Image (cartoon, rainbow, N blue to C red):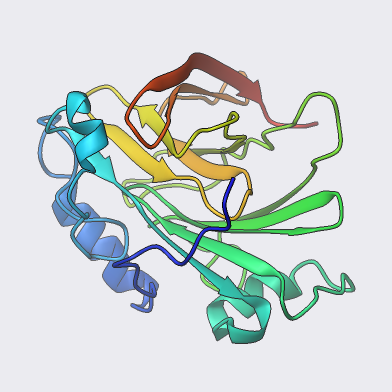
Length: 230
């Protein structure tokens, strides 16, 4: 896959957590009539790429940007510091994502991938992160590192997991009950995705995942049900 440039239209999620929560609360008042109108940081989603028009009007494009550790803002550095004494080279690419339910940071050092999650609910770590994960990328079967401890503004659990893009995939799509979130692959890293389909009793989350190439051809479709690592 070609080296990807920073995705257009991406912005920093710089608003206080309380403001984010208020925006999310207002957006979620639609009573199941489709997706919220704004992303977690209060911004409006970008237009659906022409290649994915077949997904329909209830598909929402998440934001992503790529920055180096050298240029990371304090919020991203708070995530990186969580993994101290890990030494992260200054040129390491960090992928920051903002969706409807969550925001995330993902970066890779050697054969390990690291990341932090944020939602509109209470933060547990500085940043305003509610969780952090690590996983190995050199195993035959990649562990999605599911987390169900983060919550939305209504205190409902949010399931979070990494998805590995298949060969040739540009878009990872996660379908919810009445909408779908579109994530663009970036920097060759796993894509951190979110869902409300959480089984608290089984400490698991289920993701309905589709992957598409740049022309909109569906490359894969699967239902990932993964449990929190014990």
